[in-house]
Image 1 (cartoon, one colour):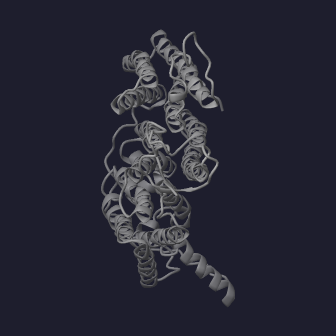
Image 2 (cartoon, one colour; image 1 turned 30 degrees about the vertical axis):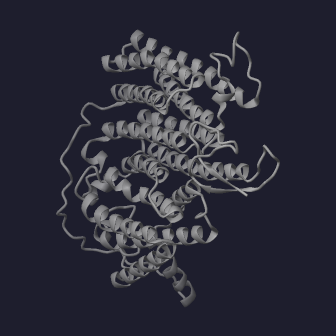
Image 3 (cartoon, rainbow, N blue to C red; image 1 turned 45 degrees about the horizontal axis):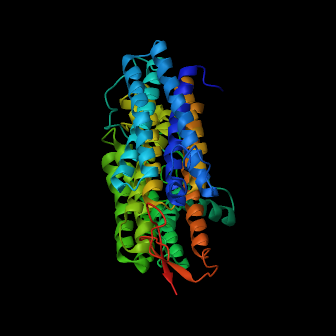
Length: 507
């Protein structure tokens, strides 16, 4: 399905174009392309062409920025020429005003020996432009596709009468078949669908942290401990929500809701998983074990018992549970909580509402039946769709900052972030128009694809950088090792990039 209106399509393209410029800027930092092209707009006097392949990256960045600027201008012109609201017009006008200023700062950064403060200002202004475009898109879609009567309502009743009937568990005949069904039930308690994504988060954090602490033993212990921690949290969640699960169609067949597994055995299973998980984390280091315990308690107690049944912000605050694996992965390798781990955790934290609100839309009636004050139930579907778009934009910005600050992410990360991110954004715009369960699930799966592909790109990009760092191309002698994520300098002491990533141990 194509977007039926031209204006939101242009604004969405402009927003993703600005995002391309932001990530391309990070790529020029990693490759030190600006140092290979120190003129403006060419690489020297009279629009001189670059003399190296790296210099062409800087030229491509400038050409793309110019073309994207024309798209931003076109969006603003269309807003003033059409029947758009005043707030949309002025936000887009602000983006048009900021764009040449931001480009000018970029020219200064590329051609002069500026401070890092100028580079940060360049990034911040680009983020403001992107935020303005996403905000304008959200407001326009809300005005055109929203329902005025779809406003705030009272939170659903929590003191619900008990369920009198519990569906009988369906067990197959035969000892072997029954054993298989029981094992499958315990496996389901662990919420395995969450495992792959959260373990991928921890893997990305460990790859970013790198250094001497990144060993096969550390990775194996951390991922095994993480999977079991997720299993323990999921089991406790099943135990604590078993009564509510019986009311909801999508959860009424869970093992504890149907009493297929006794509560006491489920608790013993969860405690065992938690103990083994923390033991594995402890074998790595104390900080990883502490963060692992926090993750289990936060999801099982704080989110399940306090946040989920009592506040409409349960999904937002509860995003901390999904973000903790990033801190655990980083701490497992480095023994501390670093900036890279915090930024990756911020990406997960902001992504969670953009991801889960789609599921809340699809199961709105189910959550209301269960008495949960989810965003669509309490604030309405129109507000929920607007928040999905805003949190998606915030996720994209956090991903861009991660690339700029760590300088360990290159072309693959940029391509994946823009291409799969564009698909995610397209699914959200379609959700505004279609407003169906199918559209909500489409956006939900697109959000999964975006984060999964982005995390894989993080792992592959960092591994690729290690491969490059394993060979000394200047002397042809593979004689150095990756030592730490400190300043990365050439043998003569000069810095090789604006944001150095690794340091070499010369032998």
